[in-house]
Image 1 (cartoon, rainbow, N blue to C red):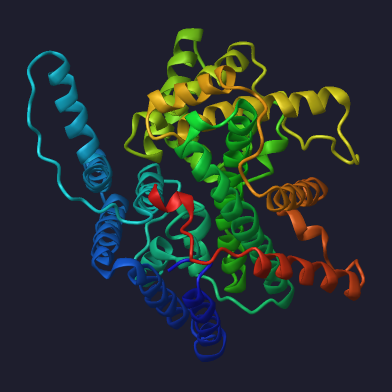
Image 2 (cartoon, rainbow, N blue to C red; image 1 turned 30 degrees about the vertical axis):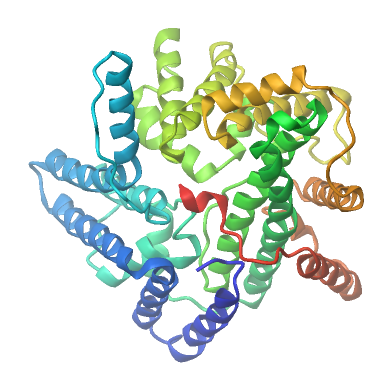
Amino acid sequence: MLFNSIEFTIFLPIVFLLYWIVSSKHIRFQNLLLVASSYVFYGWWDWRFLSLIIFSSLIDYIIGIKLSNANRNRRLLLFASIAVNIGLLGFFKYFNFFAESFSSAFTLLGQPIDVSRLNIILPVGISFYTFQTLSYTIDVYRRKLESTKDIVSFFAFVSFFPQLVAGPIERATNLLPQFYKKRKFDYTKAVDGMRQILWGLFKKIVIADNAAIYVNDIFSNYTDYSGSMLIMGAVFFAIQIYGDFSGYSDIAIGTARLFGFNLMKNFAFPYFSRDIAEFWRRWHISLSTWFRDYLYIPLGGSKGDNYKKTRNIFVIFLISGFWHGANWTFIAWGLINALYFLPLMILNQNRKNTNSVAEGKHLPNIKEFAQIILTFSLTTIAWIFFRSETITDAFLYIESIFINSFFVIIPFQETKLLIYILLISFFIIIEWIGREKEFAIQFINNKQSKILRWSFYVIIIYFIGMYMPAGETPFIYFQF
C-alpha cells in the first residue's frame, strides 16, 4: 500500500479510530491492532511475502530469548540470526546478480557458463526490516538491551507499518520499549504529525514525481540532449531522490506520531551540507548510523593508521552501495562517495561541520554558499551513477555533457518547466527557513496567526492536488 494512494487515505483513518477509540484502554489490544494493520498494509502489495516477515520475526524473537538465557554459545546464536536474515536478503536481492556476474567473469576468460536466472520477485522493504530485526539480536547479544518475551510487542516492532517498507530503520533500543508503554492521545503531537505528513506528501507528489517526468526522459535519451539539459537532468534527479525518500520519511514519522510513537529523524536537510562528511551525517541517517554502529566501529572506525582508516571507509561505502541494489552502478556510487570522504578523514576534517549552516542567521556567508554548491555538485555527479542503468551509461552521460552542443532549444513545454522550477525554488526556500527544525514546516505553528497557518496549508494542499500525477507512483526506495 502506497502512502500516496486512495487505499491509504481510507486505511489510515480507520486504523487511527480503532486504535484510539476501540482499543485505547489496553496496550496489548493496541499492539495487536498495529500488527494486524501492518500485515494488511504490507500484504496489500503481495500477501505471500508476509510469511518472510513472520518467519524473520519469529526467528529473532526466539534467538533473543535464548541469547538472554545463555552463557555459552552466544556467538553461535548471533551467527544463526545473521545467517538467516542475511541469507534471505541475499537470496531474494542478490542471487541473480551473483549468478550473472559469475557467468560474465567466466565468459571473459573464454569459458562461457550458462547460469540459469530465477524469476525472483524482490519483496518490498526486505532490506529495511532485515536490518531492523538484526539491530535487536545484535543489541541483545551486546547486552545493551533485554530480550523481550512479549511476542506481540516484538512483532509490532518489526512490522510497524509507518516505517515498514522504506524506513527509518529503527533501533530496537529506541522503538521496541515504546510498545511496552501506555500511549495517550496527544493533540499537539498529532497536529505536528499531520503537518509533517503534509510536507512529506508535497515533497513526494509535487517535487519528486514531477521531477521524474524530466529525469526519466533525459536519462533514457541522454545522447539526444544538450549539455545544459543533461546537467538539468542530473540536478533534477538529485532533487527527485531527496524529495521522494525524505518525503517518505516525513510521512512515516508523522504517521507514527499520530499513534503516539517517536521515530528517529532520517534526513536533516542534507543538501545544505558544507562537505561530504556533513552530507552523510544528514542523509539517510538511520542507515548511516546503522553501518557506523554495527560495522564501522567494530572494524576499528577512525582509529589506527591511515591504512586502516582507508580500509574501513571503503568497506562501509561499498557495502552501503551494495545494500541499495544488485547492480554495479550502486557499487560505483559507493566507491565515488568513499573517494570524496577519504581526504576529509585523513586530514581529520570530517567532524568540522556539525552544526546547521548559517545557524541563527538568515543567509550563509559567501564561503558557506560556495561550500554548499560544491558539495551539492559532487553529490549530483555521484547520483548520475546511482540513476544510470549501467556504469557505461553513467560515463557516457557525463561525457555527453561536454561533447554535445551546450545550448539548444528546450524540448519540453517551457511554461510547465518554468512553473516546476518556481515550485523547486519555493521548496528550497521553505526547507532553508526550517533547516534548524525537525522538519521544514515545523516553524508554522501556533505562534503564527490561524489565518497565516491555514493559508499556508491550503496553498500546499492546492499544489498537491494541482500537480498530482495521473497514476500512483511508487517511492524510489521501495526497490531497495
